[in-house]
Amino acid sequence: MERVYIGLELDKLVELMQKGDICGADIHVLSVEAKELVQQACLKSCVKKMCSGCEMSDACGRFQCVSATPIEQIKTSLERY
Image (cartoon, rainbow, N blue to C red; front, side, top):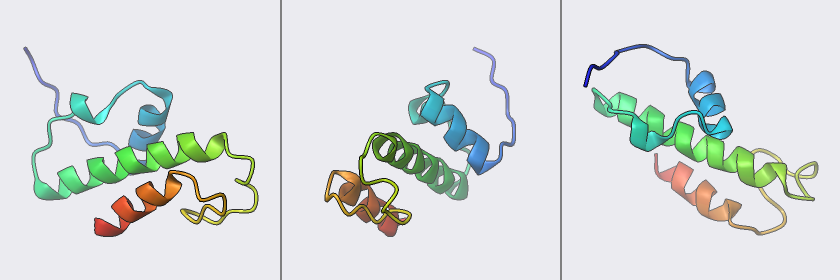
């Protein structure tokens, strides 16, 4: 299998993950820093998916879900990185 090594803006990676065009399992990272960025992108895409369907999303700040849904689990995960 041939590999292509590219650079990608974090926001673009999040966008592709949210659309389902790519997932973290598709990515082979080359450094610890890249691994952390891919993990952040995975978590950010999850946040966007979960918050987009939440009736309280207009009242929330970033990662501060007032509806006490599973978003709190993602917030906790993000704080570790």
